[in-house]
Amino acid sequence: MLTITFAGDESGDVSFNFSKGASRYFVMAVIATNQPENLRQSLSDVRKEFGLSVSYEFRFNDIASAALRQRIFQVLQNSDFEAWALVVDKTTLSMPFSVMRRLDFYLFCITELLQTIPSEKREKATLILDEFGGEPDLPLEFRRYMKRRNIPRHFSRVLTKRSKSEPLIQVADLVAGAVFRRDAQHDSDAFDMIEKKFINILEYHP
Image (cartoon, rainbow, N blue to C red; front, top):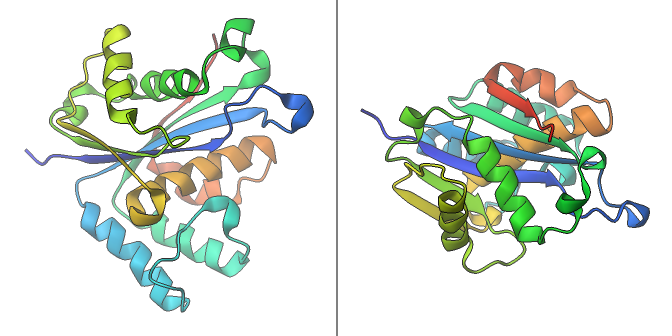
């Protein structure tokens, strides 16, 4: 049985201070592949094709070039991975959500999403999460949160890495960004290119 590598990242923010520019939507995305090196290499190939630095980080909101955006999503369209996403319209949430710690809100969203992924896929898999807010003990906090919610973890390893150093997190960022733009800006061009990659997109309703 092939083990799977998961990577997760988010788009939008966890703030509820809408008067100061907080995003209405928060999107959590997780991608999964049993060929992580191939997926990493695909991003490296696009960097070479466009003459980008080897350290260039693919971040959905930072890609100003329409040609580069089109190309990277063409590559993702033909790459071997699956995706899941959780979409939260923060304006619909009750007061307890708005006073949660930022980390707790993040952990709630990621664990809510992970529950939708079949346990057999998570079994002995590796989960790589982006560093969130500089939280040094995110893997430990994640394990504690899963236990408090009585969610079987299944993962053999939970790691945090800087997105700049982990292309799989960059793929998760691109996936989350495509969903966010679809809902927040009614622009589905990027999303449409990878729509078939999604196993589930959960619209969270409390």
